[in-house]
Amino acid sequence: MNDAAILLVDDEQAILQLLETVLRKEGFLTIDKVKSAEEALAACERKGYDVIVLDVTLPNMSGIEACPFIRRLTEAPILFLSARTTDFDKLTGFAVGGDDYVTKPFNPLEIVARIKSLLRRSGKAAPVAAAPATGIIDFGRFQVHEAAAELRVEGKDVPCPSLVFQLLLFLCKNPNRVFTKSELYERVWGENSLSDDNTIMVHIHRIRERIEPDPAEPVYLVNVRGLGYKLVKKEPPHER
Image (cartoon, rainbow, N blue to C red; front, side):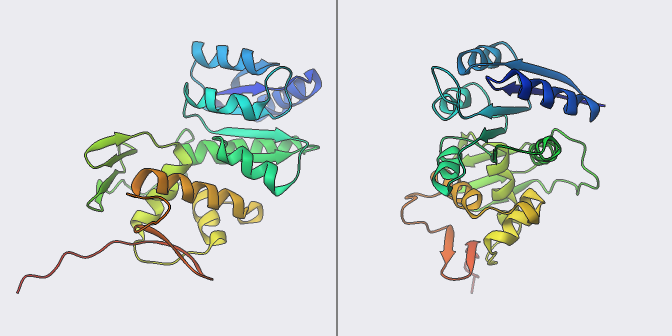
């Protein structure tokens, strides 16, 4: 049994019914279904959701167009469904606030697996063997409060979507170490077989927008050419 609240948004009744049936078989009890972006926005205003499955092609307003408005109402992970398969389409989905992207036609069990992964990453599912929170990780300009899942930059609270926070937290716990994109995906998303370079690139960009003085010239989260990314933490000077 899973008490996570899920919102399904698709204009095809058959897809809504299929996903609801499979999710209920997997123990999910709170499932709402709507057929348009306008209905999705209204639902998010009325109720809090833990995951939103959002079709890209919707009448009147597309899922891509609706996503930024949904983001103003909730930080719930958003899983896009789309018949569009190009890297540009996927990158656009991530850029507007999506957390995952699955192309049609799809195996409904894959959707369930992706939803469970998003719930784990956002802390809405019980961890199998979670390590105790370590408190506050201080990088000078910014601090990550692990137990409270909060990011503070120059003394101000900065909103941080769940997967962006999880990636930042992982890097903060492993400062000055280079990780490839595939390593980051496996460590944070936990699914090496579903690795997507675009996912990592977009989430790296989202972190830089929050912690860097100038995201275009990063000094904390830097790219090591040909190898990957590392989060730089400078040690305080030793007193003589």
